[in-house]
Image (cartoon, rainbow, N blue to C red; front, side, top):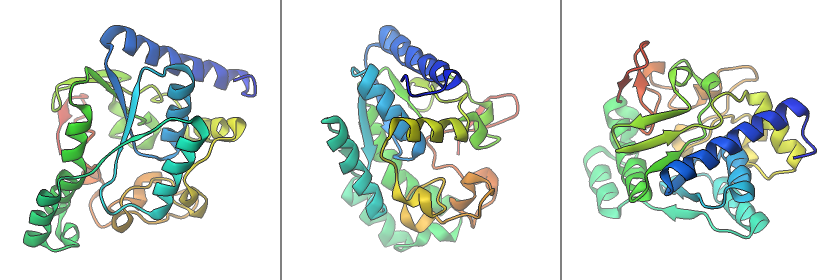
Length: 240
């Protein structure tokens, strides 16, 4: 990390220490990668410094081709594998039969149902048997995520959740990526700061809220997939 400016070295060192502490405390720790910019940073920190942590991702069946390309580039760079979980085919078929292939556009309830079938179901299989999971959320990403804690209990899934990049800014993330020469999602250069399923993601103008390109037809309060809670101002989880 000698190529990094001192403040970023310190930030990265603190994140690495959080990851080491999580392994020391919980032993079985996994990282659920979204394959966004933060995920590239965490993949580098984990595969370089804390290799005991297992990395997995979810292929919902509606990802961009560039997302699959990034998986391949990361695996080739580090010589390691990202475990890929796929949704239960019968569950997805059942949801589509009831709501239509693009039924998620019909309202927040339908969209959350689609996320549950395509993302939450395989996610639950991914974390099975682990005592803690790592996430790449940052406090600056949204008012909801600003209320998160670096280490907290995930009551919905029954394990601890660690967010070692919580204090990082978007600028910190990109400085790290460029200084370390890391591969990243090609759509970031096309105005996509936050990337998920193709039908639910679009480019945003420069300077816009990075999350505004996700589920843009919904109210801001409902724009989470269900992995991370919507919080009251007290910090109490109110699951969506």
